[in-house]
Image (cartoon, rainbow, N blue to C red):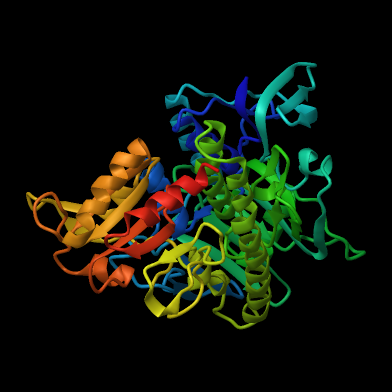
Length: 517
């Protein structure tokens, strides 16, 4: 029997499938479409997603097909007004190696993920539509349109905003569809237009934007729709795209051609009230949809999957109790609520600022949408046993200037015994928990933890002589707020699980043992 059946082969489903397959979990992923999607759809990965892909071992390939140096070129009345760098919200630092978003078409991201999945011996089953499912205490039985039955321990819906799985569950999807906020969108060739800029023609009576898609000869077009004499939107087409371009860009030498994808977008702001019903879980757009402002759609789904993957793998393998899956909703549902609020506000901000000549979509890029500050301090998986700031053991209180349990674990440059550079992110990469020990007093706790928990924990000793990594510039201690010897346990998804005193081996043992219950 399959351990996990994933329905939907977009970035969310593929990321989850990779995370499970890489941990040896028996996984199948089905997609009702007979062929892979060709439209760009999402076109930006935020820095946190880049960190996720580094941990998965695919970042180099992703960076090789995208670009971070794309400036926005704003026009008014057909004239160039300003060129703007959209990613100036956060300065690069040792703890945050990626602070610029990566422009890359969603289809290219999916291809990299499919290739990674294939390396684990798993491929997407195209043309396989789920038409029904039943669940019991022992598992889930899914039925396909071809009448085949698939037995699985768990079912994960990654089948988009119109999720049939979600609709079959006692789950609400409350929110609004803003019918007046409509855009036409598509992928087109634009001969004669520079590919060094995201072009944005924004006038008082409408707008059109063309963003080059790296690794292709296409631009993603977004525009306010053409309207007929009755004021109703005209159906999106190559002809309407050209009409809008000629009207706003006033560049007669540029012709749009060969559309690879055409669609109409309406702003939806909705989220499920539950992410889990028994053995069925929701992820990505099946769980939440929101404004495109800030480019968080693809990113939020990827990060849903990264949160769920290690938990589902441990439960499926019998190495963690079923209750661990409840922490997926506990952590990611509030994140979805924050995302809906943030993207909605960013959308409204852009609507205000674009009225001023020279302003464009750079208003949506703030430090918030980079994803680096999102964490789970409220989570039952966030435990603090170091006694600092009067913390009572569940995080989320005290001095917010330092990282706490539940926060994203920062990177830091270190050196090994031979003086070779090592980054903490390199230590984190993989499927294990990482137990960081600061100082000599933590060495015994590291040894005991590795002995007790086998391949679950990788020990990393910092600043303690032979066998340890040298914090030669003190960045690791500063990033983690450590002033003496201490223990920090980092989860497989790169969030801090536990902070404890240097010799408190029992805290680590209790934490990991609790997951099994």
